[in-house]
Amino acid sequence: MAAYLLGIDVGTSACKAALFRPDGTVAGQAQSEYPVLYPKPGWAEQDPEDWWSGVCKSVQTVISTSGINASDVAAIGVDGQSWSAVAVDANGRPLCNTPIWTDTRARAECDEIRALLPEKTLFEVSGNSVQPSYTLPKILWYRNHAPQAYRNARHILQSNGFIVMRLTGEVTQDRSQGYGLCCYDMRKGRWDMDVASALGVRTDLLPPLFECHQVAGFVSPAAAALTGLKAGTPVVAGGLDAACGTLGAGVCEPGEAQEQGGQAGGMSLCIDRYSADPRLILSAHVVPGQWLLQGGTTGGGGALKWLREQICPDLSFADMSSLADTVPAGSEGVQFLPYMAGERSPIWDPNACGVFFGLSYAKTRAHLIRAVMEGVGYALRHNLETAGNAGAKISTLRAMGGSANSLVWTQLKSDITGIPIEVPASDTATTLGAAILAGVGIGIFGDFPSAVSRTVSVQRIHQPDRSAEPVYGKGYRRYLELYERLAPMMAQP
Image 1: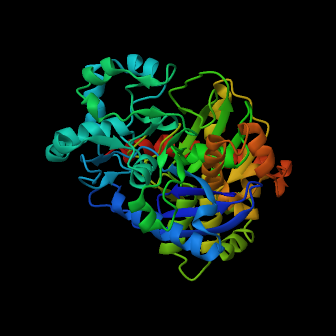
Image 2: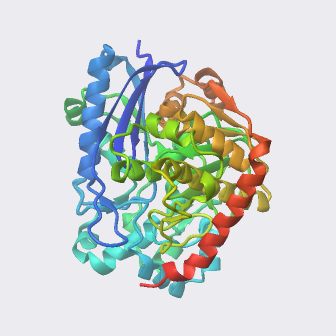
């Protein structure tokens, strides 16, 4: 009898695949890396074919190394990075590289959108502000700057939707990523064709909408040959990587919150009512009937990855964490603004850039490492405070992503925010969330709370060190002031 669930994560730097038993333990996992392309300032794009190749390699490896038969895989869930705009033709072939979530090329298209419809009207429909990193402005960018791709496109897909199509042949748009298109009515959970038409978007490009745990199709013989999966295996629509990671961290009830420590940073707070705030991101949770009030930053684990590649190539992340622990709280005055690809919430500034402040000859790379960690922590606090000002109540955070493996980084985030942080199986939270969707979709789990209780367990808890509050309070105030003072200079060409 099929007894395993496969979660596939289409991340920014790699595709991860993990095979889970129904109790949430990992039976096998693998990943395949691919590049991000930066052809022009403000551009960040990927080839969706690289995603598919990564999926095929990762899934083949998982199946071959786990020692199971492909027929033992009961169902598959796919999550993906946000705000893609994969233009595919009638045969499902990508017509160009897709701008990804850090791409801000569509700034003029945002101005065009605001000129066509008041932003207040669009906010009432989509529950989110108009941003160049979102999907709909990218569609208009295709129309204005890549007319052949726009003309020949049959659908515009999200990253997980593209992989679901490659696995099954079915075209889908999951509800958790609808918010990236300001013609998606967040309250009603459907496309607003009048808004789409008013903005000049071809409505035939918008895929059919699916619940995230809904079976979208079945692995085709062609996909089975490339992945090693069994033809006919059910595939659910899947959802946003942050939302799947939130579920995989055990957050599915109102008031619970996740702290994200992957390539990006931020937080996701589960709420049971529609509550939009223009400073934050509101999306449907992958759990039906629940919402996620999110704070998303561009500088999460990716900022430390950049520092390692450029400054510390001889160090492992564990080495970097150990070095950071040799520097006292506050990094002896060194501060870092983690705006490595503009910044998302709550400042929404595509011109924002990364900054080190407070350097001297006395400072070492250990100071730089800790300053990066603290800068990401300050960005998290900024989003949490914004959510608090909007009326949200957060008592505990669940950490996920590779950053949660660092005891030093997780502790200082707790110290900076003043909030306890619980850590489940951080490396597999996102793929586990995708697998849970598959399990609920085919009935292995009766509902989401029971799925979480069966699969998620807390491994450790970090309590905030209250003695560090004066140092981090001062550092946080300076963090805010640095951006405020430098923002006019960042906006200059």
